[in-house]
Image 1 (cartoon, rainbow, N blue to C red):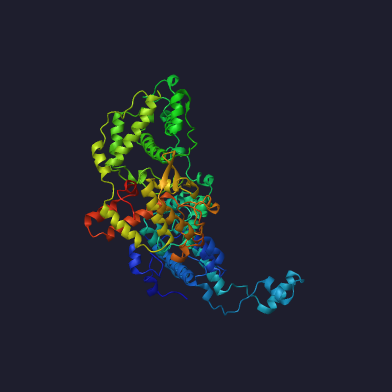
Image 2 (cartoon, rainbow, N blue to C red):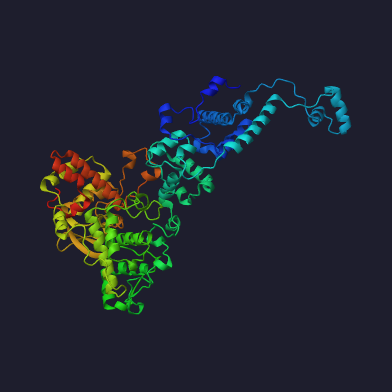
Length: 634
């Protein structure tokens, strides 16, 4: 039945009827109609089964099985159609489009067509003239007429064609998410900082399958529907959604991830960077003649990789013994890097990107003034949206950026020290004439930094608080791992990346001495160190709790990591997905997992401290402070 004029005036043009006024006020823009709304409504008007049309065009609104949501969406679409007609002064169409033809009681006699009449009367074998004669005998000279319902459907379909040409607009990348998505979805996306379709698509591509894991009220089903909608509108958005978003991270091969970012002259990882020929260093202003260069490198990126290659001590020794044979690695082939090399690569990569993108200069053309400008840039990398991103984005992700934000004075000094080392190597190998970093005033003096480093250790009082907090932790698999990790860091002074790489195979028992020793790779070099018996005792209990053999040297433990994944997820978080509950007790963890756990532990210890100064120190402490332990954890 037609909607009353008073009801028509109260219809909201901004959101679905179920949205509260407070929620409506949070949306900065009205929703728009797209081609999918019209395609779906054609099926509704004609009384067809709408499931297929819903799943094809409007699944982003929710599942078709949610009948209440489907009815609300249909009502909202009718209201929007009517509002668009009224804006064009077509009030008749506005009333027509809101009538539900399926509710029309078509009781009037329907005059069939000649073909229908012949079939009903069994006259198919008669001639058309004979059929027409019988037809006139029954209905006289009346002509077949359409039913009222059929006439209404045709008028509504014609109105939909007119409205579609008038109101449909393709989604654009800078449109607000509330313009196209269900308001309930849009509000949660906006609270997560995803205000435009471009930002939403970048988040999906940058994180992958679990892109919505941290967004409240957007579960797996809703996230999949949003991805389907974005993929359906790739042509107008101009942003392709990669196939990698359809698979879990654990099921993606490195080759699949390598295709997510396309090579470009932009802020991308070095292995994806396309360097223009005039900026690749072959004609750098600071270059020495190629004939006397000691490394096989004709371009800056090749020279950079040769420097990284030389940072391995054994290789550096070979290079010094045979300087003319120190070969550079192909720029597109990443090498297996140790912790130190990764830290050096990060600083060199940042500087090279800045030189190309901001200064439009080759690495071998940078001068003293450029180096000064770079140190200033590190204090405030701008524009931040281009240079800075969230921590932890892997290099395959479009969300990866060289920086997280401004660097501290000590971090800027570290960057300058690393870059000076790079240029020193290149000048010693006769690739460059001079080192522009020589004599450059650094942000902090060595004395100040030394004093600061001497303070980066925990006092006896702070260690007492750590011990009390450790004893008070609930008995869980993750907390057992934390206790073992802290003891291992304390007695070995290993880095997090080195600790999580340890396996039970690295332990050995010296029978002649009755002592345990641990083999580890420290700064790329093998090292053996003693391990106290109490640490081995705690480790045995930890291995047993993970379902492994209590004896670290038992053959059944071969290949198992010393620090494993938490095995009690099902008890502590029964709502977790199945793949998270299934844990191999032999598997290890990432350095970031241990870092986050230790930092969270420090924060809890800070809350437990009564002295504000002690609490402040604990809150600021990092995992590196544990490597300078003054006392032991008992």
